[in-house]
Length: 209
Image (cartoon, rainbow, N blue to C red):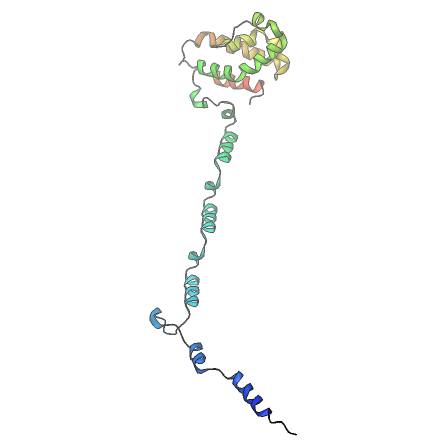
């Protein structure tokens, strides 16, 4: 008994490995020549060469912004950091929210700035000392105005002395400033040479500078 199935099996193998002519033609199809590329290069290759020819165009927006900030470092300072740098450059401005150093030109303006800065602190110390008798003992009634803050410091110095730097020197400083203010504070535009510097020394005594 003999079998003749081997020959059809060989034909089946040949048919499975044959490639239709339509597929062969499709695999060799190239891009149309409308791109103007004589060598029929792919679009991706052309774009890659264009990017390599101009590297700056490959920079993403975030990277471009980072490069701009590195080129001009001053622009990278945030508003809060810029304000902190300004205060470090001129420490006296840090305790003068209402006026700059240039605007504190008269005795009146300087004493008003001292009243704003020292007033709450001195009032708290005196209330702690005198308690319910505060309104009856303190030499100037609230709210303090003009040179009241200097008069209160001079009159009640014993209560304040232990809380400031160099008590004896500061006491003499307050007395001198009080005399100057009595003579000049009524004219709100009158300035006295050196009074602003004395005011800054008083701020230092109260740990404000």
